[in-house]
Length: 117
Image 1 (cartoon, rainbow, N blue to C red):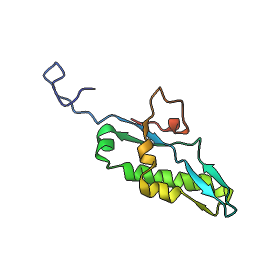
Image 2: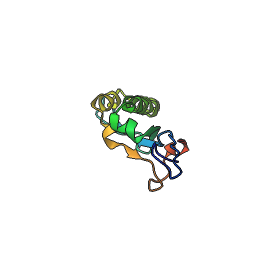
Image 3: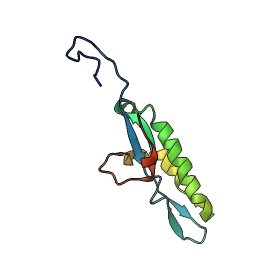
């Protein structure tokens, strides 16, 4: 696909920005009142398709962060914790600091089923 410049035949072609999977792990901690704790979602990943421009502008990061919070809470549910740090991690943007671009170098995470155009 050509960028919005000449493609060698004096034609200009504008193509949509390439999107890729942007992933992060919704890892957090769950706590019980007896003082014990357990890690939440150590093997899970949440991915969202976005272009590099969308990532750099931050325009879709809130959407990804909300998806991460939802997945953290979903994984925590069966443990019946007295409280978790999911909301704290969401509010601090912790997971967004751990974002990776899912490429062939990333082992096939659960988010590998996300197909981006």
